[in-house]
Image 1 (cartoon, rainbow, N blue to C red):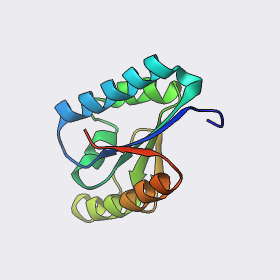
Image 2 (image 1 turned 60 degrees about the vertical axis):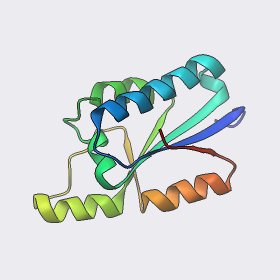
Image 3 (image 1 turned 90 degrees about the vertical axis):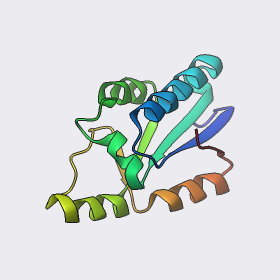
Amino acid sequence: VPFAEAHVVIQVSQDDPARWDLILNNAQNMLNYFGQSKVQIVIVAFGPGLKMFLADSPVAERIGALNAEGVEFDACHNTMLAMSKKLGHMPDLVPQAVIVPAGIVRIMQLEAHGFQYIKP
């Protein structure tokens, strides 16, 4: 979003569907306040929080709807590899997920580019 007034990165690191709803509500509220073209939102999931991005997650439909409004969903590849050791295969994520090498590094990179960091 080249002309966005606000750039926000939201961390998801807990396996807590109530918190996932809160995070998605936060994203929707920002979209409503700024307008879709004026805010760039990246939600980064790692560790237990990656379960939010699983294809059968209780918030999978909401992820699809918010992605259609421009919200980016970044999934930690390190966490995926750790999960694959337990599952015997890579986790099946929502199609909107963008795989990044390391979730925490992605947050650091975004912060270095002026993103505001939020951890609900």
